[in-house]
Length: 175
Image (cartoon, rainbow, N blue to C red; front, side):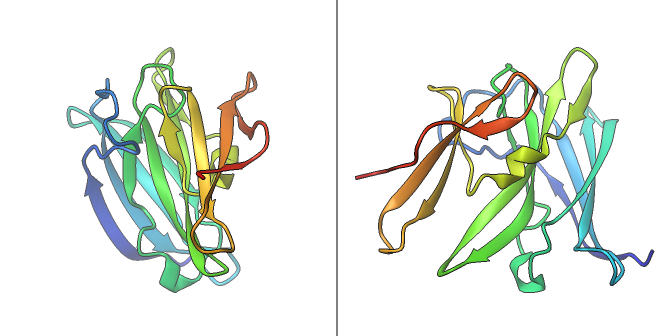
């Protein structure tokens, strides 16, 4: 397997929500993104999650096969409590997906489990368009711009007992 480094980034805590609650863990995350060989579906990433300089876990994943020019944000890291358990989780950007006249940001969410000290990635999170944490309602909002070019359309996602996240109810607009 041929690998060539696209970028290496060390990211500090950035929040997925404005005015978010203070994060409990101050993770340091270094991400290495790389190309895979021509038979693989897209670039990949490897991230080392540390606290106080000590490695906690190495995680890895792949983009969704986005075009090369849409990977500028690939590997960017956000820290937020996305599963509302009081612990800081790690989100790694998969890039921008071009859709019609807009782009969607998608993320892998690595959820921290304080019981065993490990991170787990429910792959259903990456299906959410432009995710935002709604701390008040304990849900994740996905959104996109409607065909009129102005109206923002929202969908609500809730964590399920099986550890995955799922859209619940109908979408709505901000009007």
